[in-house]
Amino acid sequence: MIEARRLIKTFGLKPVLRGLDFHVEHGEFVALVGPNGAGKTTFLRILATLSKPSMGEVRVAGYPLPAQATAVRRRLGVVTHQPLLYGDLTAEENLRFYGRMYAVLKLKRRIEVVLEMVGLNVRRRDLVRQFSRGMQQRLAIGRAILHDPEILLLDEPHTGLDQEAAAMLDTLLRDVADRGRTVVMTSHDLTRAADLAERVDILHKGKIATSVRRGEIAPAELPGLYYSVTHD
Amino acid sequence: MTDPTPPMEAIEQPVVINRGSRFGGYLRAISAVVWKDLTAELRSRELFSAMLVFALLVILIFNFALELDIRTRETVTSGVLWVTFAFAGTLGLNRSMAVEKDRGCMDGLLLAPVDRSALYFGKALGSLIFMLIVEVIVLPVYSGLYNINLFHPGLMAVILLGSVGYAAVGTLLSAMAVQTRTRDVLLPILLFPVVLPLLVAALKASNGFLQGFEMEEIWPWINLLIVYDVIFIAVAFMVFDYVVEE
Image (cartoon, rainbow over all chains, first blue to last red):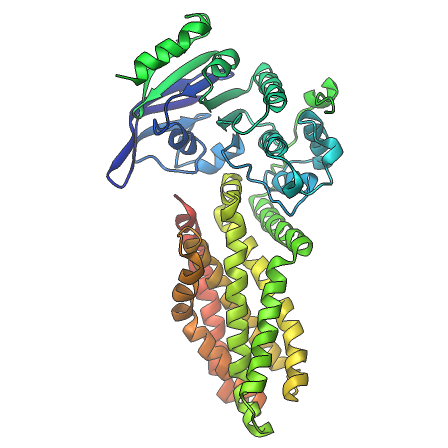
């Protein structure tokens, strides 16, 4: 579903990704963890077609990037650090705007379903600028799943969420994964990453340093492995 | 907190995506961006009120600064009008793109599966509509203050052509400027040299209509306006994708 080979990305003379190899099967849930500056966000932005690789090959849903970026975007739902929402529009209007951009039919019904899924139906006519950080993040998830994408890319989606909102996000992500969608999520929370994902990849210095499948090691051992990999 | 779980049958319903004509999708994306900009602006009135107040202040200041007789007023009118429209337009262009950048919404637009030139046309059309609304309000105020009849069909056409070109170039350059930290000062620095031919042509053509010149004298300036609009819309259509990419 997603494949990156010998991926290199530099900003000026500074290399961020240094020959990264990455592979995700259809329906897999993969968490990318790593220290700040490891290249997690840069890699996710390349997959999301928001940035172009300096060298190497990337294919998403079978389409090469950046050549067939529009075809890839149709299949992607993306949640970034920022909610990508308009504060002067209501929750419903934000979803209506994005629904029209993704050409979603029966949009009114779909918006109702999505707002129910993220628990914001009662606030649908409220302006997004009046929402808390947690509510904005929930609506951002709603925006990302509005067109029911095959692939969901999430860049530290739990950042700024309280316990309740984070638990709700976990439920949503499990539901998305259970319906056979492919999920790639970056995170700093090792416990949560191990709990949600089938595979945890540790990114360090622009490469996948190690990869652990669920059940290969005990969740309690993951922090130790992470420390040994990222403190070489 | 409310129970977030909707009925399972609702979740399981497949999402239907309109796979209609590519051109239809293109137009739908343009209209969505325009609708979004107008709806947000109708609610906040941040951009429009700044443009309008600025424009009214400029013509008021010129009215007191230039204590002119009626004949001289006619000769300076086109200059005062286009200076007002240009500066007010710059305010609007800057703000229109800054809204996208500040909340990261530019990424949201760039993630949409549409040709990126559709985003350009949506933003340019939104800016053009704001400019035209300001102009529709400024013209009668100017007429009243300066005691000059501005309601000439030819002048209206020139204002429309000039505004189209200004919004077309301005949207492209504001998409460049907004990516820098000095965007507020950078946009006028980039924009004014590029729109100089447009402003000169609009000024000359407007002056021609106000002074009652023959159409033979005015046509070359109108032709220049049309050519400028066509060229810069075509250039923006081709390069906008490269301007917004990281």
